[in-house]
Amino acid sequence: MVATSSGRDGWSSRTGFVLAAVGAAVGLGNLVRFPAEAAANGGGAFVLFYIFCILLIGLPIMLSETLIGRHGQASATESVKKMAAESKASSAWTSLAGLGVLSAFMILAFYCVIGGWVLYYIGIFVSDLFQSGVTGGALVGMTPDDIKAIFPGLLENGGLMAGLDAVFILVTVYFVARGVSGGIEVASVWLMPAFFVLLLGITIYGAFGGAFSEAVTYLFTVDFSKLTGPVMLAAIGQAFFSLSLGVAGMMTYGSYVGRDVNLAKTSTMISFADTSVALIAGLCIFPIVFAAGLSSEGGLGLMFDVLPHAFQSMPAGSLIGLAFFVMVGFAALTSSVSLMEVPTAWAMGKFGLSRHKAAGIVASLALVLGIASAYSFNAISGFHPLGFIPLFEGQGVFDALDSVTAKLFMPIGALLTAIFVGWVADRRLIDSENGLTGGLHQFWRFLVRWLCPLALTAILIVGIFPSVLGG
Ligand code: TRP
Image (tube, rainbow, N blue to C red; front, top):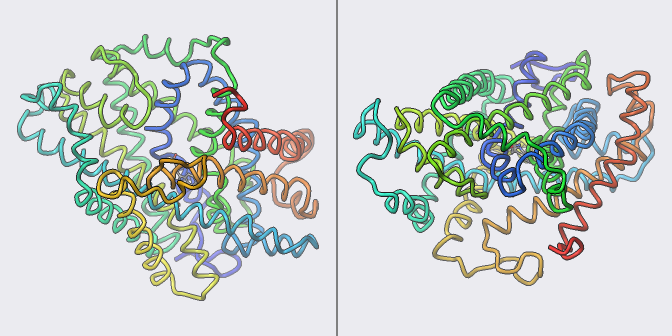
């Protein structure tokens, strides 16, 4: 265990922090959600605007969140409380972190269900490797209809999903319970480099055998007529999810950072790595999909339905399919660890619990909610917990957790963070933490005070009233 200046457990080095934060940021959001959103929103225009959002909105908020945590050296709620008190502001601002802790818990619950699906596909490709061999395509002997039935078949099986969810949560809690430097950092320091090697390997392999130039054209040819309101909002929302913002996650990770670290630099490194992975993931997935002559449908189907088809016709498809889902599993795990750490750190601070107890309780509660999510695809699909709110009408537990956090809690959390750092907190505190000087400092301040709140308000309004954009 490495202690920070305040005597708490903390990252062993700046590299440890950056890798853990990259691990938190790089996850299913980059590998599943980004390519699917790009596909659903017309390719290049979405991608270009997404990069703008990362630079002008995501990056300033990432810096804001990490500096609150680093200043507080405590759980997200206590850090905000401390900064509010030192700025002579109302302690009600603490609720912004409280909302974040709740959102992180809710995301954790459904995220681990998807983690369980990834385990299932790892299982499929392991057994396929034995049956189909290394050199041929994957899933030989299965008709397209058989392959198409895999994913719906899984969604029908609530018990299997719940069991896989439990396994994924167990692995997650193992790392969280071992602490910041001894568990979370260890996971990232080993898994992230392995992840990068797999991602680059599969991308290069796909570039030779697949439709690489078609994918490049698809992702990077910008047709500005496609840059509509809904596309822009999808890009902002994706930027936030991908950088893990708006749920107090980066506040929590920031609280384990030493005083000597320049947070502006680390935020830039983390955002750069996350965006690169999203773009490379696009260049990894689309060539494989296009080479198999499949269309790039959006949604979860891209990964769990389209890709298995594509691996079937690919040389060494079983091996590549297995490597692919192992890689997704690594990325998902370091993200679920970050999501679990937020409520765990909160419970430790709030109730004085040991890390083991806090993590165990959070994991058990996440499992309960995860089981409900797993069965919301089948046995209890008719149960719509928030059905009385028009925005969430007809959504089961899984979908409701996803949309409440994505449409409401995350933008609200990020909006409050921007207002708090830009307008409420004492300027001297902020200036001494952010690692910026001169013109860049002015620019960052402008973004946090004006552009971020405006953009986030727009996301919120359109999220709540989709008809504003005629959608
Ligand atoms: N950013 C992760 C991804 O891309 C998901 C994630 C981890 C997350 N921690 C978060 C999302 C906190 C929002 C908030 O998959």
